[in-house]
Image 1 (tube, rainbow, N blue to C red):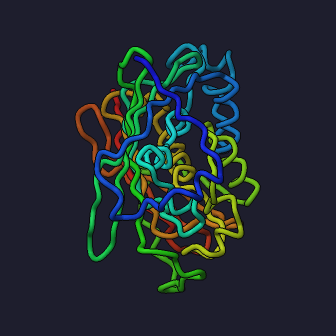
Image 2: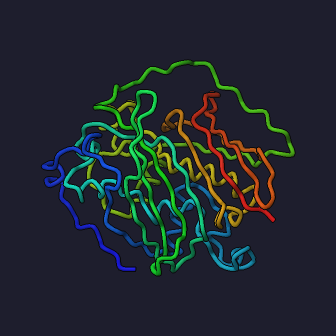
Image 3: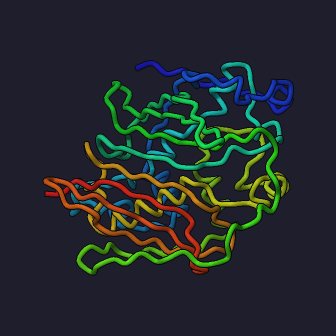
Length: 321
C-alpha cells in the first residue's frame, strides 16, 4: 500500500487558515495516509510513559517464554503507532483546528479500540483517519473520528473511534463541580474482580506521555501540555490525555488475562471520561467480569480518584479459551 506523508505546515500558515468549526466539518473529511515503523525502543518508551513495565513488552527472555515467543507492543500502543491526526484532516480541507488557533478546546469524551492482531517490532503500521460522524445529542455536539490501522500490505491490524465534544466557542475556565459528594465504589464479588491498578498523575507524567506519543509534528496549543492555553479552557488547567487513561484501563485487563486476550479478533476496550484527571490526582482503576460467554468475557471498568469521585467508566471484551 502506498503512503502519502502530510506536508509540513508552519505556525504562520496555521494562523492564516480559517477555524474548522462545526459548520465546516463534514463526515468523510480525511487526513493523508500515514505510516509508522515500530521499534523495540519505541515500545520501551511507550511503556515508560504509561508506567506499564510488563516484561512481555521489554525483556527478550521473558517475551520468548510468553504467548508470542518474542517482544510484543502493549495493546494500546496502537494509539501511538496510528495517531489521531484530526488536525491534518482539517488542514487538507483548508482549515486549522480551534486548538491550533488558540481559541478553544475539543476534548476527548470517549473512545473504543478493537484489535485484529498484535503489533511487533519491525511492523509498519499504516493508518487512515477521517471524520466518521457528527452527532447532536441532548443539546450537545460531538465529532466521532475513526482511525483504521493496517500493515503495509493492507491487512487490518486494529481500528478505533475517538469522540470529542464540540462547544460553540471558548469554554469557561474553572468549571463548577456539580457535587462534592463521592461517587459509590462498585461492589465486586471476589470471583469477578480484576487486579486493581493505581496511577498517580503529575505534570511530569502528563508531559512524558505527550512528548513520547507525538510521532507527528504538531503546531498549536495543547490542553495537556500548555498551561496558558489550559487556563483558558473548559477545565481551567492542564489535564491528562484521554488515551493515557485508556492505557491504564487496558492494563487492568492485561493483568487479569494477559495481552493476548485483547489483541485478536473480538478483543476490544472502551473508556468514557466523566471528569478530567489533573496533575496531582491519584486514580484507582477497578474492573470486574460482568458476563461470561462462550469464548469471551465481558468486562466493566471504573476509574475513581482517591477523593472518591468518578473520573470515567469503561469496559471491554477479552477472548478466552
